[in-house]
Structures are given as structure tokens and as C-alpha cells.
Image 1: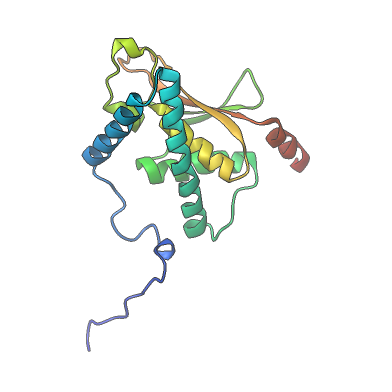
Image 2: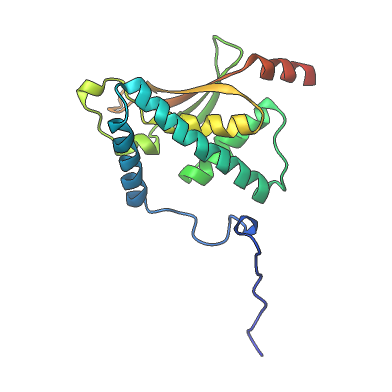
Length: 194
């Protein structure tokens, strides 16, 4: 028969390549689901710090699964072993899979040796959120900070990861910076590897 080819069958959903099929989720569907996540968690807490922690915990679970999926599909179960390698992986590969583009910037902190920053001019989770004045400094970027922490912990690079607003000149909305402060053990291991 002409034009009939073999269709490759996959025994496991994890074996399907990332490049096949539709990779995007409707932005309105994501915004609705994320809004529901925030609203639900808001009813379960007493203060903003607790709400951000719950969002970070939800993001952590996503990050751990994203790492597993990307390592299995794209890297043949290999993981990054160097600090700059894992930061580059998060900044480019993970960000592109989650947000459709590479993060705006990855920088090393100038004041502390163990700090790195991933900055995004308009982080997707903050894009459609309006924060009431009584919620002050609430930052939905805590969810993304949790994703980053989940990826780093799963890869063996424990860190404290937080989200911060940074005002920008001439811009109405501040950019979001994900601050990564690695554990002492990561820096000692990196120094040993040279």
C-alpha cells in the first residue's frame, strides 16, 4: 500500500518525545486554574507568608516532576552535576518548557558567593494578578520559586529559593527575581570538583 507507514507505539507516556504533539496549554485555562489555586490556598491561611509558602510547596511538587520528565526524555536519565550546568538547565530548558521562552537573565549575586538570580520582566504567574492593597508584598512568583527549588533539590543542589519584586525605571510593574541561595554543601562540592 502506498502512503501507509508504521506508526511508532509507545508503551509508556514518559517515552513519548516532548517535541511531538501539542505542547501548549491555553493561557486562559492556566490563568483560571492558577487563580483557583491561589484563592483556595488563601482561604486556608491566616497571613501572606503562609500563602506564599503554600504556593511554593505546590510549585516544589511541579518542579520535582518536571526534572524527572526532562531528564528521562531529553537527557537519557543523566543529570547535571555542576552548579553552572544546573543553573543553565533551569534558566533555559526548564523555563522554555514551562513558559515557552528562556528566562530574561541569569546573574550571580555580587554580595554573596552562594547567590544567583533568575529575573523575568513579566513572570506569567504575576501577569494576570492584581494584588489588593491589604495584601502588601504578596508575590505569586513564590509558585515559580517552588518549581525552581524542586528542580534543584531533585538534582542534588539544595537551596533556599525566594521570589522578589524589583522595581524597574520607566515600568509600571516591577520585574520578578527568583533568588537562589545554595546550601554550604553545594559550594564545598563545587570547590572540590574545581
